Length: 191
Length: 337
Image (cartoon, rainbow over all chains, first blue to last red; front, side, top):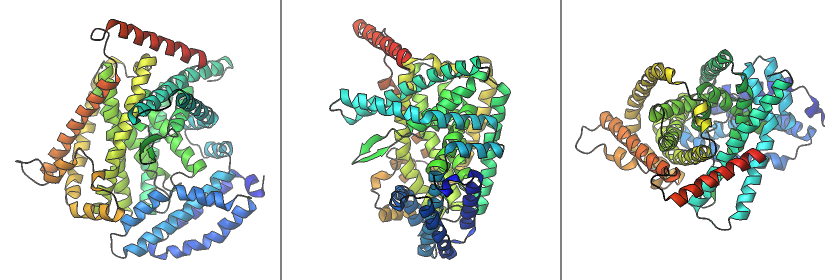
């Protein structure tokens, strides 16, 4: 746990938001000023003991959409400059968000969201999502592995059918799990 | 379709944030008003389901793969307010924890994938489904709703990017629509597969969250209003889309997309208008309607392929085998779930 991890989640969320809104307000022709934020972000990466390589590879995942829109932006007057500016702005914003996501746990974020009075059903949904998503992803992975073990070779259509019906089964299991969670909540006097 | 930060201007981002927080607020209000105590756990766990389902990759071609977005599917399974809250939770977590989609662009993303996706998906599903639908019709409607929701989301995404001045609408609209017509086909097929298997294991789940019979009539009024609105939007947008064939070919060349990346169904129609009719915007709208009808027919064929026939038309031994298999599956679900 570094000092960045321990910093209050509200502060981190607010600071990232300020930086990102500032970048969005910057006109695309002056996007070079966004580079000023880079030393700060790199300092945070070092202080949080995050691997720069992992962060960059995660950045590369989002590249297709960025490049797509940026290349469309080239179809207008001063197109090249605009598209480069957009690319720079969005890459820095993305890096900021990644730092936020990898140094803040979802339960801390949830506390902030409750503090700023997000509607209660939404907060409940996020809390349960945080609690059950890893469980359900594990279940999906298990089902996929079982399927792969049973099916040695399959045409693409058969594979799609198999994957789709396992998703349907996952939903059915989800609902029965929700029913049990609800019974448990009610029997403890909540819900 | 997750818009990252940096592409939207401050004005567009803020106004869409206001719009979608209104929508989500209304959904939360509805949920709190009907206050079905069983719903809160179901919504949360369904959000986890949508989240997990988005991680299952479906192989497309040449090493690429696609995944479900799920707003139309959620609208069909959970009803409109529930689906909206579920999608909102998923999009917020994706943004804040996984940096997928921007935080300043969160309102716009919520609008495209949550509000537009769920509302259009729900309306198309209800409209195509009618009251007391057969399983085939239900599966076909989910497929159709998935395609429509994807296209509508792509439309509003292109509109937001153009309003922010990221790129001209003439270029954005054909590119986004072309790509998302294909993505929508994937969404339609996956949604149909999921609903077909839910129908096999626990068909009552699909009826559980449906409005009661007595709500059918006022909702039909709301639906026709929604349909009229969408036709109006289509009529407003169609001339814009029609004015840009040269932009589209330029985009496809520069992006290295093949010409087949355009919607395979709509391409021959939208290229020429409907032959023998008036050309221009009217022909485009007409072509859009015909293409949509054709698409619905294809969805119906898909549903026919996925839903097993009622036992009358099937060989009896096969039918009993099928029901036995589904019984076994149900036992497996209940014991392991």
